[in-house]
Image (cartoon, rainbow, N blue to C red; front, side):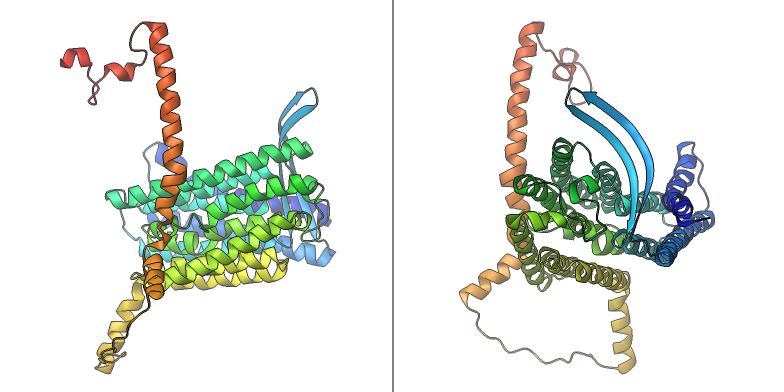
Length: 464
C-alpha cells in the first residue's frame, strides 16, 4: 500500500470521526433518548483519539515519503453551467504544513477540554447539550482546517460560529447569556457576509473556489497568487473583514468579553484558543495574496497592531479574570496578524500553536485560581500581597482618558450599532414599508396576516 492509497483512507477517517460523533450524540436526542454521561464520555474520547491517530498517521506518511502536500478529493457535488459563467461546489481536503499541525492541535485541545468538561459538568442539566455542541464545534474545526475550497471552509466556518454562539447562550435561563449569544451571532453574520462575497468573487475571477486556483499549485507557503493586484486586493480585503470578525479584532472586539458567559470549557477551547485563531488561520491560508497587493499587506499589519494595542490596554483594566484573558488573547492574535503581514509564516504558525496551548491552560485554571490563592493565604497565615496602602498620585488628563477608553472597551459595540446595525435595520424597515404599501394597494386591505393579529395571536377585530 503506497502513500497515495494510505492518505485518502486516513484523511476520510479524520473527517468522519467527529461527524460520526455528532450523529451518535444528536440522533438519539431527536427521538427523546439520552445516552448516559459515561457513554457520551467514552464516545467522545474514542472519536478524538481516532481522529488524532489518523492525523498522526498522515503526518508520519508525509514525512516518510517527503511529500509536502496531499489532496483528498471528494468530487463535484453541484455544477451549474451558463454560457461563459459556471459554478461548481467542489469538496477536497488539503494536508500540508499548515493544516496538519493545526488539525493535530485541534484534536489534542478538544480532547483535553472534553476530559475536563466530563468532570466539570457532571450531572449538569445541560451536559448532553454541551457535548452535542462540542461535537459540532469539533467537526467545524476539522473541516475548516483541512478545507481546500472556499465553500468547504465556509461550511466549517459556519459550524464553528453556530456552536460558539449557542454555547455563549448555554445558561439560557438567564437573559444575559442569551443576549450576549445573540450579539456574538450577529457579529459573526457581518464577517460571514464578507466571506460569502469573497467566495463569489473568487468564483467570478478564477471560475472555481479552490484555493489552488487562487494561490497557485505550490505547497504552502510557497504558492504564488494567480490573480492581479486589483483582484487580490478585493478578495483579500473581504477575507480580512471575515478574519477580523471571527478572531474578534478591532472593530469587532466587543463580542470577546460577551463570549465569556459560556461555561469554562467552551471559553477555554473556543474564545481563548481555537475559534479565536480561525481568522488568523484563514490569513495564513491566503497569505500569497499579500505578495500581490501591498495595500492589503499594510492593512493586515495595521489591523494587527491596532488590535494588539487595544487588547493590551483593555486587558489591564478588567476586573474579571476571564475577560482579562480574553483581551490578552486578542493582544497575541494581533501580534500573530502582524507576523503574517510581514511574511513570517512559520513564526506566526508556531506562535499561534504556543499561544493556543497556553491560553487553554489559563482559562481552564481560572475558576480555581482565586480559591487556591485563598487556601495558600490560610496556610501561610497572612495576606500574600501585604496590607500596605498604595500612595495616591495624580494622573494626567491623557492617562485618565486612556483609562476610561480601555475600561469602556473603546465603545466598539456602540460604534457598530451606530454605523452598521442601525443604518442596516433602518434601510430594511424603509423597504419593508414600501413593500407593505404596494401589497396593501394590490390587495385592497391589510396584505399580511400579522397586521390583523394582536401580539397574543388573536384577531384584532375579535379583540375590539
